[in-house]
Amino acid sequence: MKLPFTISIDKHLLYWICQFSFWGFVGIFTILTEVLQEQAIDFPLVIDTAFTMGGLMLVSHLYRYVILKNNWLKLLFFKLLIRIVLSTIIISIIATPINLISIFIFRKDSYSLDSSAIIQNVIVLMIFYFFWGLGYFLYHYVSNYNRNLKWEALINEFELNQLKSQLNPHFIFNALNSVRALIDENPNKAKESINQLSNILRNSMMMDRKKVIPFNEELAIVQDYLALESTRYEERLSVKYNIDEHSPLYKVPPMMIQTLVENGIKHGIAKLKNGGEIDIETLIKNDCLVLSIRNTGKYEPKMERKEGYGLKSTRQRLDLLYHQKAKFSISNDINSKVLTELIIPKWDESDLVVAQGD
Image (tube, rainbow, N blue to C red; front, side, top):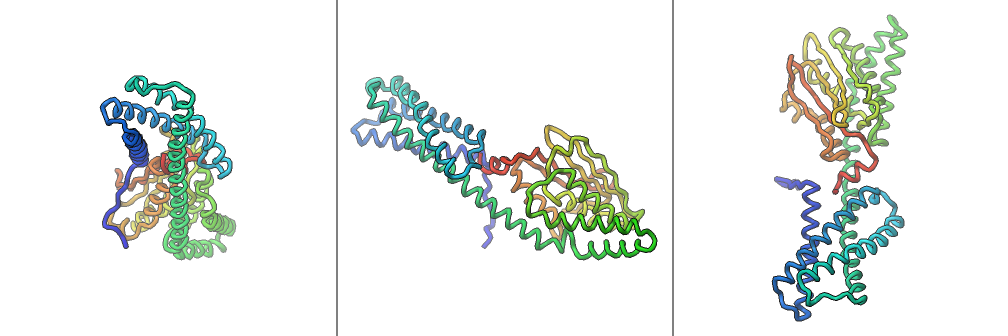
């Protein structure tokens, strides 16, 4: 059953909601413990607890920074367990002065520096930080598991829709017809076209094995695809490239650019009597790869809802791989052209993990 609406919470906001909720609960638990020990709830107790919880939350935030900085979320269970145990002990010792200073400032009558009180404080903090770490790592484990399930489901959906979208029978049929026509008049061109079609088919089958590939590899697929389409459309299709020399430093999801180029031809140029032009341009901006695809035609949002599986797939894949770091847009541009734009950050193997929860 589909819900009539979905609630989407920014990962950073969710993180801070969880932080305040956890340490707020710990603060309430601490006050109730004092009450059970026949300690009256007064202003010094409340302000001392609030100050302490703020300090402990700050330490947990620094702890999270260490986790992400050192890619602990990617470690195997045994190595991760050792780090959790050691780090819990260390941060509990580091955080102990916060509690002692707070008691000294706000409740001097309860202040004690004897060894048993300090040890007891460290043990209590170890329990708190153990449950904090347990919740943090469990959240990421479940998030990673769900994200992998979504990725696998998307790949399966992509494979099921390939015949309707990327490498549909019509494309293969048209490509083979073009090759057949070339066999007698230009055998070398026919051989080259067969190689191009073979490259496209091979790369489409490799898609589910890699989340991203070097930009140059994807560009080669696009060039093969456009070369085949140029054979079919002849003078009705004009192709221009303006590729930034630093583009090969970036990686992109496989078959994504080819999907967008095909979308431009299928919904734009193919419908025009005189054909049109495909312009592919890249530039590096703010340490991101900005890819612009312009095709002759007109963008109609209602057509995307009816036939635009490729665009839907593009948005889903970008969201799964980069979360909110990558951007995708399509709109009508000047000179009767449609502009499709991708903004992709540099790929790091930890990106998929970090993007999931912060």
